[in-house]
Structures are given as C-alpha cells and as structure tokens.
Image (cartoon, rainbow, N blue to C red; front, side, top):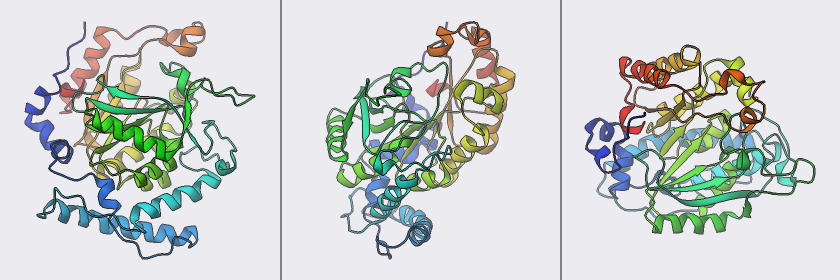
Length: 376
C-alpha cells in the first residue's frame, strides 16, 4: 500500500540530500567535527558564579561569535581535528544556565516553574535525574540517520491521546506514589558511557528522544561535558521548548528531527493537551533552521480527516519558512492509547489513514517543491 524508502546507502546518491545535509554528511564521513566539541573549546569571559542575567548576556554574545567561528573552523586546515577542550567553556556556561533554570523549570513552554532541583514535579513528572527507558541501535529511523544511537527518556511534555509510546511518555510513573514503572535512573556519567557504546556499535548519531528529551535538557548538556566522541548530536522532539531551552541547544545540536503535527490549536489542545501549539513549535523549528545547524528532517504525521485543516497548512508553512528542511510525510498513524480505549470519544480519529489521504498530502508536498521522498 505504501511506497518504500530508499536505502541508507542509496539515499546519499541524491545530490539534493547531500546539499541540504552537507555538514552532517561530512560529519558522518569524518570530514567535520561535531558542534558540541567546538563549543567545548570556545572560551568565555564571565565567572560562572555570576547572576543568571549576566550569564545570559555572555551566552548571547558567544552565540553570535560562535557562528563565525564555526564557519572559519570548517574552512581551516584543522577541520578534521578535534580542538582541545578548555575550562570554563561555552558548554560549561550552558550547563550552568541549565542548572539554574532547573530551580524554576522553564525548559518547555508549559513553564511549570517547579524546583526540580528539590524533586518538585511539573506536568512531565521528570525530576532532577534522568529516567531512561531504553538505548539501542535503531534501524527504523529515516534513512539518512540509520543506524541511529537512540536514547529513549521516560516522560513527556505532551499528553497525546493517540501516543504509540504511552508506556514511556505518560504511564511510566505512578501519579500518587511516584514509583517508576518504565525506565531506570541514569547519571550523566552513565549516559556518557551508553552513548560511547552506541558509537562503538556503529551509530551515525546520538539520538536524544523519548517520550521527549526536553525535560532532560540539563542532563544532556552534562553528558556532553563528559563525552569526547566525534559524533552527530541529534534532537528528536515535539519541539515545545521555551526560547531559553532552544538557545541552550542551538550551538550543540548537529541535526534536528522535530514533529509538526497540527496547524489547528484547538485540535492540538484536544489531541495533546497543549496550548498555543502552532506559534511555539513553528517558532522553534524556524530557530533551528535559521540560527542552528539548519539540517532538519521534519516529521509530519498525517492524521485521519485532517488533510485540509492540518497537513496542507503545515506543508505550506514548511515550503515558505524552512526551505532547507526535508519533510517526512508519515503514514504511521493508528488509533492507540486513549483513542483505542475510548472509541466513542475519539470516533473521528478511530481509524488509520487511507491511501488517498496520504497521497493527497504527499502530492501537496510535491506541488510545493518540498523534498520528502528520500525520508518518507
């Protein structure tokens, strides 16, 4: 019924894919250095004991300087050489800011402002420590990414009623007792070893995913402090981060794998219990495109009966605002989780998508000049 993706080798024979994902392609060919390693070698001019406002001022100054530094490094004779890390570095500054934000958590736009340092829990139910459900070499991701070294965190900022991973996103922790059902607590040092093992097994990237990785932004930055492998860092997320969260990631992530499900905010709130979806997620994807690496595969899940309300406006936005991005127009929707349990309440989406619906969405992508075939 559905078309077959090109293989992970043949996909790189497509010159447009190589052009749009050029730095990532060179990185997996060991021709470039992962951004986080360059951030670790970028000096700061502030004491880490300074107040948060002062730290942010220095962070924003360095963000501008890093753009030019990256260009110059990529063109230098040392482009294949990992620079020696320094202390304190731009990465140390990011870690310090993240640790401070954790005390009134605003990593995502829910802005619960809970003190997660003392284990106060917000909507995501994630405390100070990371809970990891699994970590393995994943062959089912987009062809440009496999094999992908996936690290699945428990917990999520969304409450999607059709979530196929609800056991790790929403039902991983007892609401009353806090007992963890799915996942094991891991320190940054332990996760650094996990990521290293995935790299040794042949991963092309370290894929931070979940659930959703946003709640563990501070942990991931700590991991990178302990990590030394020249490998792509990939952010695989619903992209409901705050501006502060995005700013901490822009320089360290080599590749972005965001979801973009809804154009209709009312439908987003009904499906994922999330307010102001469109403005937040499109803002963040555009930040990744314009201010981050710009190497992006957007995942758009086609939902039954939502072609004109969601798929068309999403594809139109992508074509106009993030022209370098590839788009995976996904046909994997199926009724799961609460949709499966409460058929009457969600009767409008209690079915899979049809061949005609997926074809309509993909034809629209083609009409708009979106590159979707290599990753869908």
